[in-house]
Length: 341
Ligand code: NAD
Ligand code: DAU
Picture 1: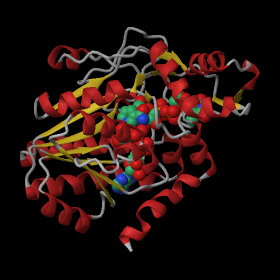
Picture 2: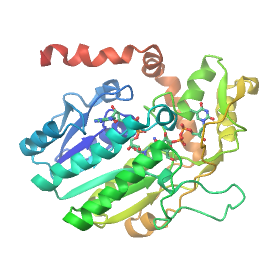
Picture 3: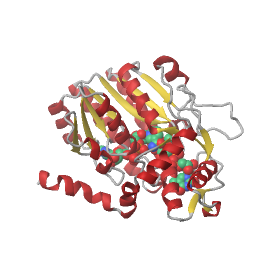
């Protein structure tokens, strides 16, 4: 089978690529990525030269380019990871999120509809459900929780999800959607909470905690997300949404203090800063559907996952130091510049 994986140079897409390219040598995986600031081919060095992996640079919202690619490549399966993914950036530039996350999704689905695919999978997020109150620990997001978004980012993801369901009902496109909680693990861009705090703590820099640090996120190791997506794409029922999460709720302050303890750094590095506008209070996933239907069981809990992740950032300093310095952005030119000239 031939897979188109969009956004494969981002955090979750790169982890997914490592997982599937090695697990399924008989399948072909094409990684399509625009290489925005968040795309980093250095995360995929180990896969370069593998016979079942290739990279194409391009924009999922570029209609003529996408139509040509689908006609030429005849993909069996499309998995759409590509998106603008950072809530804080969406507050600064909502339009970019509409373009990549909504228009990009409909453009991919138009091509999938025109050429025909066996499956279109949309990688979505628990943020489409809005947030839960801190004083109701009994409440969780299920697949039937109404969409109720807070940020331009989550609104663009919810908009895309509605189009995915509409393309299924109106045009019969064979779709699935996954909605996962907060991920962490190797290759995460150091603008998101966990890698930002690890990299800054290692440099003895101030750790900016928004508001009071009481907001709760439900943390899942990226490996467990990748396994879940693979199960949904291969065995999930068409037209269904699957929530993904492992019941690992922590306040932001708990997460930051855990990192400081592991690195033997003082809590005096913590600085409370002005809150994110519209900041969601609590996310919490009920994963019963994917557990019972597809037999998904996470390998990591937060304690084992955060220990593995901190060790990865200690062992791979060069990877994130090149991001902090901006050097990673020259990599594409160095690797592909001559070949594309
Ligand atoms: P990321 O920001 O690390 O990576 C996004 C990738 O998409 C980058 O490589 C970027 O270059 C690429 N991209 C962006 N716009 C593009 C476009 N127009 N055309 C082609 N490529 C483009 O994001 P991530 O954290 O890996 O998230 C991947 C997906 O998973 C997103 O759809 C996100 O909404 C979803 N998600 C993320 C989390 C999380 O905790 N990070 C949790 C649940 C769901
Ligand atoms: O829930 C899934 C979502 O998780 C994904 O859909 C998003 O793509 C992903 O970015 C993530 O969104 P969050 O906004 O929850 O993640 P972020 O790492 O930006 O922030 C996590 C929490 O930490 C949030 O409550 C805000 C807070 N925070 C974040 C940063 C970057 C801080 O307190 N300080 C910071 O500097």
